[in-house]
Image (cartoon, rainbow, N blue to C red; front, side, top):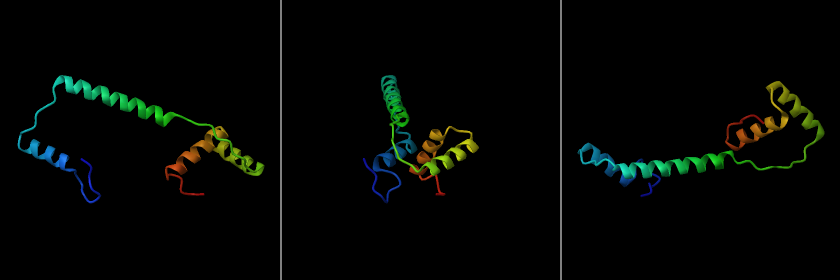
Amino acid sequence: MVKKDNEIYSKDELDFFKSIENWNYDSMSEKKVEQFKNEAKIIAKNTIEKKTRKKALNIRLFQEDILKIKAMAIKEGLPYQTYLASIIHKFSNWEYKTI
């Protein structure tokens, strides 16, 4: 069941909490546990593959900007392309505040 915007817990989660409080909770069978583990492994593998997949990007920059970026990368001890990729990554995740 999907939570509404104003709900902290869904109905299913609340029912689960009540069953534990009332000692009505049944543990999973070994078969279910293994099935759950296998599904979790597949989800984790897919997530890692998705997060680590990279795509090439071509961009035209002013030569002066490239020289400045290269100087900044040297200060950080990184190759300039890696430095640019890290800035873009931080910016896309709202982690880079100063522009």
